[in-house]
Length: 193
Image 1: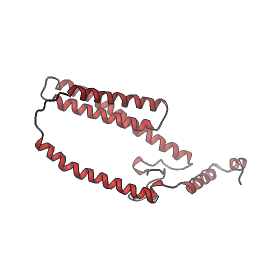
Image 2: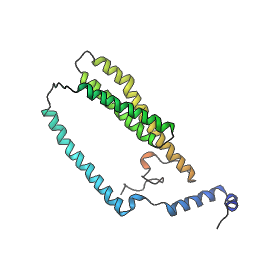
Image 3: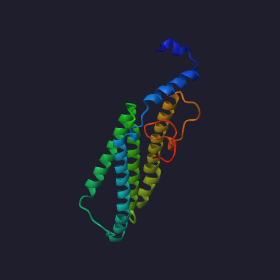
Image 4: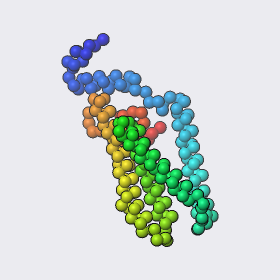
């Protein structure tokens, strides 16, 4: 057994190499386990099936939906949506305050809801007197704020990768986000099998 004092006596490069070797001994990719490989296959099949179903469904809606529709639940729908948006803001604030990785999810969800809010505000006010206000609100409020949330989520992911890269004692540039695989910090090799 090597003592802490002996480890401190090693040059930084050797300590980093030893650290990487120790991590590699215990670094299993959970997606390589048979049960997760099967689940991954099922998830991929499900996602492709959803895409295959949604394309003709969207076309069908495009040709069959009425151009004008009156709903009694209009207010409830918008209040519910705004309540969900408020909850997403609150969840994101809590996760950022607590320094939780869930802040990434919160930012992605909140940004997505802001884009949806802008889309529906603009589309549902088309041709009305409220249309100019909806466009201005979308362009100067909701969409820039959504972009900030998406940028914030990306920054948190990259900062996490960078921190792990450094803590593992790796040299060289930190990999780009598109090169980082699930559950491992090393650069991806090959297509993603």
